[in-house]
Structures are given as structure tokens and as C-alpha cells.
Amino acid sequence: MFRNPRRAALLLAAGAAAAGAGGLLDRRDYATDVSVSVSAPLRHLLSAASTALPFRNPLLAPWQGGFPILNSFASASDAPINASNHGSGGNSDDSRCGRGCLGRDSIANAAAAVGPAVVNISCTHGENVTAIHGWALEKSIGSGTIIDPDGTILTCAHVVADFQSTKPVLRGKVSVTLQDGREFEGHVVNADRHSDIAVVKIKSKTPLPAAILGSSCNIRPGEHVVALGCPLSLQNTVTSGIVSCVDRKSSDLGLGGIRREYLQTDCAINRGNSGGPLVNLDGEIIGVNVMKVWDADGLSFAVPIDSIVKIVEHFKRNGRVVRPWLGLKMLDLNPMVIAQLKERSSSFPDVRKGVLVPMVTPGCPAERAGFAPGDVVVEFDGKPVESIKEIIDIMGDKVGVPIEVLVKRANNVSVTLTVIPEEADASR
Image (tube, rainbow, N blue to C red; front, top):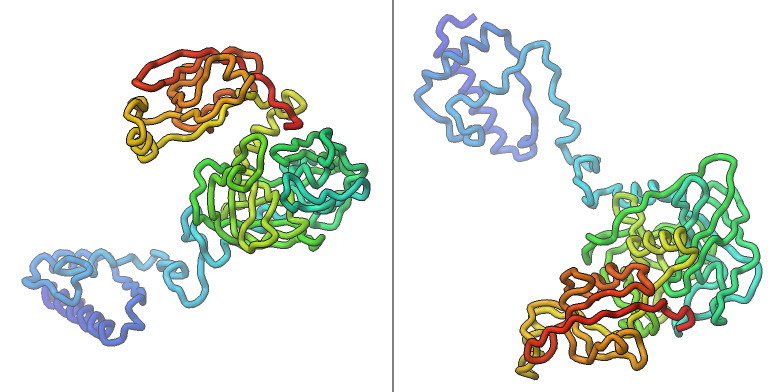
């Protein structure tokens, strides 16, 4: 035992400095953990001695103290620090990543989480679907995802129904094959033409693997996503990519009729992927893959899961999707568009947000209510609005229910109109 505490402390400090200098010469050792085990009397002795040290060693600057190793002393009974999570050594540990972090196994883990719930769907009766609204879509093979252990499956409507006529014709026999090889005969519960979403049901004596539904409202362009399905009937196929656009409108794609929004991705999608899930890195479904552009690579589209949840609620409540129709063509406003409109016409209303009405369909509910081209909707059903999506969400399935709308007109004239939505024509 040292009789001179100051001398003992100086010797240990010198040793630490030498070790630090060696680390500076050999950078390979910079991450090496050193554990020192000493008895309780010596810890007390060194602690008292360190207060008398007259210098601060610049080689030990990371510790910012005169005697840095004091706080590293451990009793002989303490377990050593587990350094397995500190080194990189080619063996990554994805558990250190936060939510959404892309690690070595992120895509594999996401695929493994939802994979058992992905199914192959094939239809053996009826004419093959060749196109919808001029877009080449999948035929009578497709994919789906079990979203409830009772056998409820999400898929694409064009996989299980023929929309060539104004009235959809459900295909005769729907065969469902699970990833583990089990086969079931399914029946179509509901199918919606405009969203291209359908629900299929199969019966099993045991609970089935089900995927978790996520949310699509906070997705950002550039996020990594994974697509699963059965392209060309090749089951258990996984592709990955990023979200290219979070709100690709149906009008951007040349699709007429009711307004729809899609998630655009660059995942590899092929015939048979339709109805398969688009998932985030947490293995949650954020969309259902519905179509691709055949003449271009990296242009695939999925229906956002938030929209699908509402569609399924409509199925349960009404047996179909009820869509209110006003007959308005609308445009979201932002400060730049507003400034440009005011440059064109000084009478444009002084608004900071809202929804512009550039056109009103003749004979529609909106025209009967008094809407006119140039109106700016600022409140809808008593709520301030600044986007078409907000108006659609407020309407929900309110058909035949009077709704008060506050609009701003030229020279800041405010008018309150009462409109009664009608149900959209399913054949439109």
C-alpha cells in the first residue's frame, strides 16, 4: 500500500497520460474500453489525493478534469461494461437505431413483420380486366393483406371485380394462398370502383397472421418503403424504394371522375402486385399498391391507408362508399397563388388562405345554392378551411344534409350559402 497518497495519485495519472499518448499514436485503439478494479480504501485514498494535484493534463482533455480516471473506478464486484454495442467491426446492431432509422436489417425486418399476412389472390372466372380509365392495370391475379385474424383481407377491386360495365361484376371463384402454402376459398365482401379497394373474407379454423395498419398522414417524400406481393404469381416477393410524392392527385395522372390522391413510389411493381401492401420500416401498412405506369420505370402508385380506413368504415356502415357531390371544381390557395391572382385582378378578395372555386357544374347542388366562379371558400360547416381535403373530410358521408358555407367574393364581399350535397353518381 502507498504511504504517500499524493505520490500514488501522480503515478496513476502518469500512467493514464502515457496510455492516452499511446492512443494518439495508434488510432486503432481509440475506442478501447479500460476497466480498473481497486479496493474501497484505495478509491478513498486516491480521491483525497487528487484534490491536491496542481496540473491538468492536456492529453486527458476529454474528461475535463484534473484527475479524470476517478469516476471510472469500480468495485471488484461490479460487472464489466458490455462493449458489444460500441464497436462497428462489421457486425451492425440495428437496435441502436431510432424509429424509422434505416439500418442493415431494416428492410428485412419490415418484410418479416408483414410477410406472413401477405396473400396471393387469383380468380378463375370472368373476363380479364385490361384497363381502367385508360391505365393498364393488373388482370385476375393479385395480392392482398390479412388485416384481421378472422380472415379479413384488403386487396384491389380490379383484382376481384370486373368494372368494364357500369355495374361491377364480382368474379366467380376467388382463391387465396397464404405465404405458408395454405389455400382458402374467399368471397368478396365489398368492392369500390373509384378507390379500387376491395375487402375479401376467408374462413379458417385457427387465427390467421394479420398485419398492423399504420398511418399515411405524416409520410414525407424520400421515406423508405417496402412493397410486398406476388408479381407474376411469384409469391413472397419483396421490393423496396422511397416515397416519391405523398399526394399525387388523380387529375395529375389523367384520371377523370371523383378526386383521389395516391402515394407515388419507385418500388418495383409488376402484374400481380396489385392489392399488396406498401409498408414503412416499422412493418406497418401505409398503403395498398394499385397501379404502375407501364412505359416508365419507378412510377408506381398506392392508395394511402388513411383513405382505406375510411372506405372500410363506409363498407361496414353503409355497405358501400357514400360520396357527397357538390359539383364544384376547386383549387387550394397558398400565399404565392393569392399574390399572383391579386396581380391579375385588384378586386380579388383579401384572403390569406382558402379554396378557390374556378368552375361550377351547371345544374349541380352548388349552382342551386348560389356558388359562382371566383368564390373563395373560407369556412365550411362552421370550420375554417384551407384545402380541398379538409372540405372532403368535413362532408364525410353527409348526403342530403344542409351545410353552410362562407365564401369571399370580389371586393371582399362575404356571402353565406347553404348547399345540400347529393350522392355522387357511381357511374360517373
